Amino acid sequence: MQNLYVSNRGKEVEPSPIRKLVPFADEAKRKGIKVYHINIGQPDIPTPPFILDAMRNFSNPVLPYGPSQGILELREAIANYFGRYEIDIHPDEIFITSGGSEAIFFTFLTIMDEGDEVLIPEPYYTNYNGFANMAGVNISAIPTSAEDGFHLPEKEVIEKLITKRTKAILICSPNNPTGVIYTKEEYEMVKEIAEKYNLYIVSDEVYREFIFNGESPYSVLKLDTNPERLIVIDSISKRFSACGARIGFIATKNKNILQNVLKYGQARLCPPTVEQFGAIEGYRRLDEFLPSMIKEYKNRRDAAFSVIEKHEDIFALKPQGAFYAVLKLPLKDADHFAKWMLSDFSLDGKTVMVAPAKPFYKSPHKGKDEIRIAYVLESHLMKEAIEILIEGIKEYKNKGFS
Image (cartoon, rainbow, N blue to C red; front, side, top):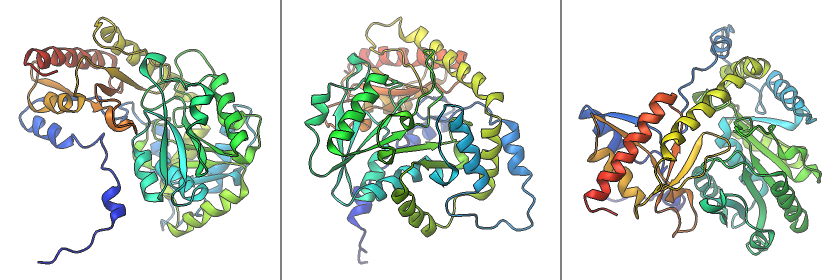
């Protein structure tokens, strides 16, 4: 039988490194082992009931196409949401997408041509690689390190990475996968670089309110620069604990970007209709659930680190935000270790699933001894999961692995 052609584009898009261990986890479960999932940012906090009620109460006899740019009522609710942070943005400057993923992809397609480059601090959200490959653009990694808390390097380090094909800097704060929150000085440095080299600043602000150090939520839309160079991408997935709703958005004052994004939006017709009504209710009633949610994630972080900090051979700085942390392990191959934890290890019939950190790096030599954890389980379960992880590290080393 003849083999049919498959595009190089499809071959080059990387499979999700966060999900690639799922078959190992499934096999462990078939053996009767309980698997604690701290590998993926899937919250277990219930979606606020009034968000679900707003979707259930959709009463039109026909579920129609909606506007390609999203329902006006939702864009108005998001504009009002930004107003709470003293950010003036018009509903027409907001474009609703099918999740934050589509927001990133549409942005890449709109601001870069094939072969262009975007600067992103590494480690970074692994799916940026997939979006870049699909858009035909290249990621140039800005180096950061665990020892420096994953903060940005000096301006000169970043400037050396800029070429004639560089079109944008993408930042994510609070950050996935590190939990770092960039300082106002770091934002100002990024602004100065963008102005000097005429670059866009793309800001992934999915975790905007997930802050544990007492600071107020921040957005690049507050930067004192040409507003047309600023693009925010966002999503309700984590803020509303509604990952499956697939509602995100792009916010920018750049009319050219919005006009071109609209073309992509028209090609895919519209974002999910019913879920937008849930999002409207979520933005209107944010104060009824978000403060307690942030407090809960802080408690989970503290529970995890109450165990981590007792073990000197694990290096990790307590993250300031989001709900992730990168741990540097006393091992050479975190990828093999993560598989081994699922296939060969259990403690009292339990094990943990983590995400090897190497795929979060562009640089091939980085992240081999690191994992990302997501503290998305209740505090007592997070403590137990970390204790199992540590016992797994001990046994892994005792068996001669390193």
